[in-house]
Length: 126
Image (cartoon, rainbow, N blue to C red; front, side):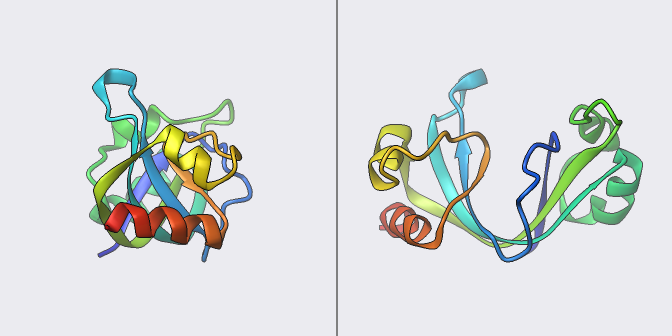
């Protein structure tokens, strides 16, 4: 199943084919853990109305939601992903940092190298 994640355009090097871990921060009552893994199909930075027109059928965000993620140029980022696998077991930040040798600052959707991705994914699915 395809879906879209919208964010402030800060992941400039994220590209199609990248692997991503979805991490929910503790802010606002979140879990503070990795929730699942996915492959990135497409990354587009554009005006909210353009993104909404292209991807509204793949997500739950309204145009107003996307407008909350704009930068100074008035653009937001849409990340189309597929094959999302929800984890059976949540992985906390400390465990993720152990796996990635402390090379992780988890913020929402986080791209990782294949070996770290597979280790996190395997542990999360077990």
